Length: 362
Image (cartoon, rainbow, N blue to C red; front, side):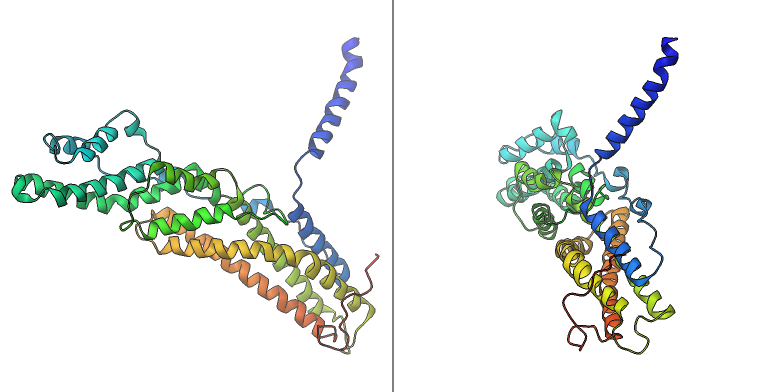
């Protein structure tokens, strides 16, 4: 009896809890801003509102799997040990080899592995410089020189393995929400810039310490700003394309100003442009575009570097296409607004232009 009485109560409690939990989900101000903009555009233009942004579009592009990014180099531990049995003239090289053959040396994370390989190359070069062939057997010197060449050839492999790290993979996949409005996020872009510089100077710069590489990657580990930027580019591209389509459909199907003079409805449309496009969406668009330009510049530098895994090359190329589409959507939307307002003598500089117009109260 008690069970029958409590069952409806428990069901209601669970339902209420579900609503409360749903209400506690983190909001996405940028998404709300764009949805409101499209809604107001559609109403002012007397067009059907566009479909809501499909979040499945964010899943259509995923970074390569870790196994496709991580590359393996030939294991040189045994030959190194044999080679340096009596290398008293290269003590630092002995230390490095001992580190590599330790338990921890066999499970180095990508950044530490890169720092180790660069330090090893420096020491091999120093050892060859200070131990001339006449002081050692020709075989020993030749083998050391051969090892140096092999390590130099493998160095880009260790650099690109950084992109299999959690820090960088986090910047290559779409985040749940876009870049927050009015939030300045630049540290991760500075790290990306330093990472591109490292790739460009890989064979000429002194070996960095493992701790310095950790410091370089730390801002990438502490944020998902890269993923948020990818989300914003995808959603803004959709918003701008849908808005341009709304303007184009209205111009084609039922001109706002049939005789080329302002109408009351055209004034409402102008107000949407002034208040909601120029006043609200455009500042956010400029914020994202500024970050995206720096991001795209570093992306281009990375794409020019040699020996990247094929899967990563393809993904970076796809990200570049996403950027190009965003740029095109931005320009097309501006042109669509200009054409629409000019057809009604309502564009800046024309007789009907005004910075404010009647607000659509419908």
